[in-house]
Length: 201
Image (cartoon, rainbow, N blue to C red; front, side, top):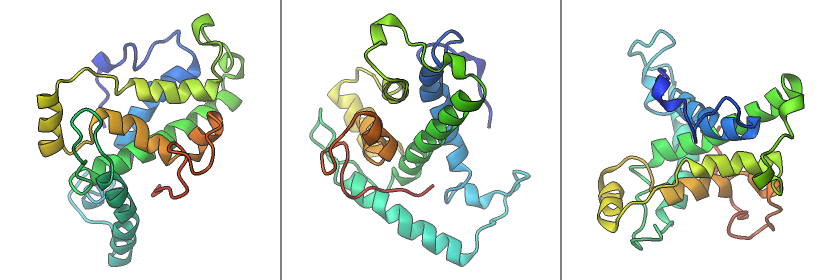
């Protein structure tokens, strides 16, 4: 995995930002890319980066069974601007990576804040003092997907992109996250804390 220097700038990363903001930004992107190493594409390459399938048939079967949850979930999501459904099949790889990356980044944030930099854990900017650090983490993740696209561009992405539309990427992984529901006190069964969640990694 290569991390280009140009990405290390706000809102993705800022050296003076609270830990929660940086882990929600750059760490969730890194987590997303790491997760690709353990999907159907990543399974084709070994630890040396050489093309060599390292999954057995049982692993592939379990992977397909678990990812079907994501395919079904995302296929039932309507993109709000265009009113069109997401294609959960062509986007499944990146949907799984979005969800896995969110989980990895949050776990890393909590561990790092606890063991390495506890003194910075609760220092939020005045304008964001109403939010907890956990809430700020999730706000930072959602901020990655804040864009202003016209209908034509969104329709193009829906048809050809292997990523879900940005509004979907900002919301559905949060719906699958117990940590998000806890941070924002989302009632069980509410839109952002559904009873059925999809989890792979």
